[in-house]
Image (cartoon, rainbow, N blue to C red):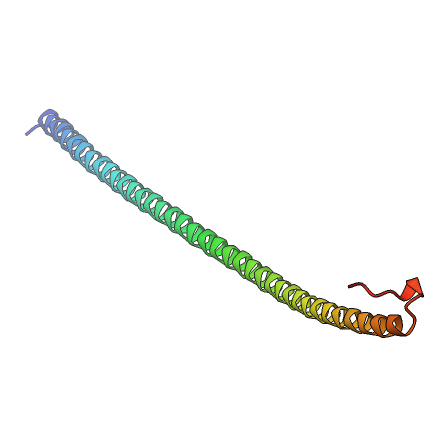
Amino acid sequence: MTLDEVLLYVIVGCIIAAAVGAGVGYMLRKRIAEARIGSAEEKARQIGEEAKKMLDNASREAETLKKETIVQTREEIHKLREDVEQENKQRRDELQKYEQRLVQKENNLDWRSGNLEQRESQLDKKENQVSRKNWKKFPSFPAIRPEI
């Protein structure tokens, strides 16, 4: 074998080695790129799932807050309603007390009025009796004349 032949084999071997190396390098690069793409796609999917979970959680929290606010508002309305009803009851009780006092005073005044009328009637009777006695004693005196 001559030097030219050896050189030819070496060159052909180098060309084959370069072709095999380029093929292996291409395949290795392709696998690395696919792995990176797969990893990026998986990461994007995970981020999407996390975003969906966060959105769902935020939606649930908003709904919970809404319900809590509604419950608190209803409780406040109920408390205010009870306060107003209690205040109205106190006012009604107070008005009833005033009414009872007025009725008592009215009854007392009616009783006093009846008493005064009775006394006046008795005094009128006594005055008439005294006038008759005096008229019998002094018939000519017109001022003491009884009402008959």
